[in-house]
Length: 371
Length: 90
Image (cartoon, rainbow over all chains, first blue to last red; front, side, top):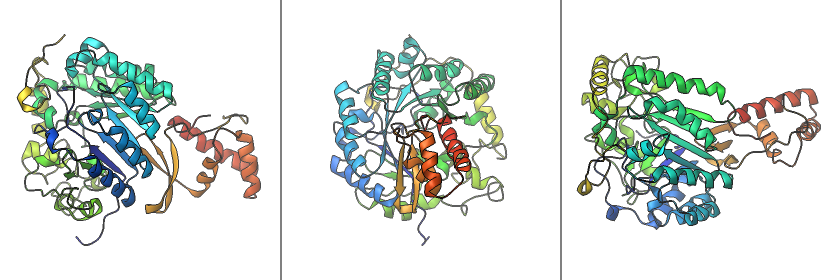
């Protein structure tokens, strides 16, 4: 294509794949980027400058655990100077008081804190890190005392699905302005652990309704962003608000991806931000061009009245479940393969939660036991 | 209804800025980009906690030679909708 697409609004910077936690639903790829492959401080600074120049507004500093990068405060300061709205997405573990103060001084705009459960035994079991829950509560207190906006993020799965509405209450108790209740999306480690994470349809529906009921109750107090359970939904999510439409993702080693999971799609050619300018990658990289717009669509998407709304759902999900990245996302009830999603959801929701594979670098694999 | 003596302001983490690339103004907040029309930009520039709502309305009505009652309605509607989203404090 010769024309230039509108610029992205958001950039997710996966600064590192290192993380002290081992959440079984992690959206990072199962093949994690090794620490030695990570980009340098200068690489990231240049990318942030280019991003601001091309029209990116929000920068999400993520990982892995971004606090594992020793240059996090320096990178944040650079991004703020470039005019980007900086959002730190952290587990809180590894964030020291000293680093927090330096991030505030650098001009950090917002902090998003993950919470794995509503109490320490549950949260520390799921996150695979003893003391994690207490540390998170401490970090939340720093953030609110400073007056920075706090988002609490909770991923919902079979091990905590009954507590989904209480996660909203916990976020309010912690002083969050915004809470993200995300029913697990099955990519990366979550896909690998799907049979341990999938709730039953009844659990899922009940949790969804209970969280929705909190909206009116907490109106003006906390903003609830609710990510629906894909396998139990009627229509697919508008994944990434459309491929190559609003956001891009840079991996620790500099690969520029349309989404964090895109590498599972065979045949896509990703360009690296170490080698080419970000704007050129956004506009012309074959991976971004592959599913931009509507030309790539098959039926039923091509003639669907919702195609401008959900963009055919998720390409990675079509790939993972059907082996065809340009098929209609089978999470959609209009997909001829939607029955498969129902089958998997029913099958994977049986059996114990225990025994999931913790997210770790390959050589450190071990299985935690519930507290 | 928002009182005349409220002192509206944008909370920390909510930033009004010009989006030069797209030639527009936006309000940036956690996970939100809100396009702001030129009238709302003028209103929000005054919401720094130093002025009362009454002062903001009077000032804008004089500046744009508009009916203060109508300006008051518009300003209140804008701020109420932002406050619901935790993007303004009253």
